[in-house]
Length: 171
Image (tube, rainbow, N blue to C red; front, side, top):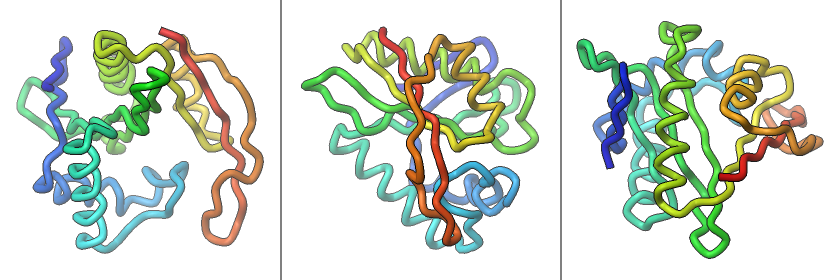
């Protein structure tokens, strides 16, 4: 499923996109609010992307590569994951390269993902942010998500437990 917005093309992630993700996932600033630190092994990123492609084939998730319509520049990824068709719910996520920050691409892409989820029968979306990730919190609130709780010590990263905020949106 290819999604298009005014400035973006979202196409299903492919194994070959791992090379495009490597600069983002090896950037400590981009990965500062993720469950894992930056990854400097391109083979590990390729394995992660291959697993995501397998999840798509099994219907458990949809991952999109985000590109600018004017020039096809790779900007990041976004997704619907943990799709539960019985309960009509899924989780959303997004990652942008540093060069794409502050330009509204995340908001634009996630609006398309939310519309796709709704048209696919999903009626509840969740999202999770690490405490202190104000940019992602603000983006989710602009999209209509409501903070539903704090997941204390939810993530173990670099030997420390990290708290996460849980957001929800009914469609």
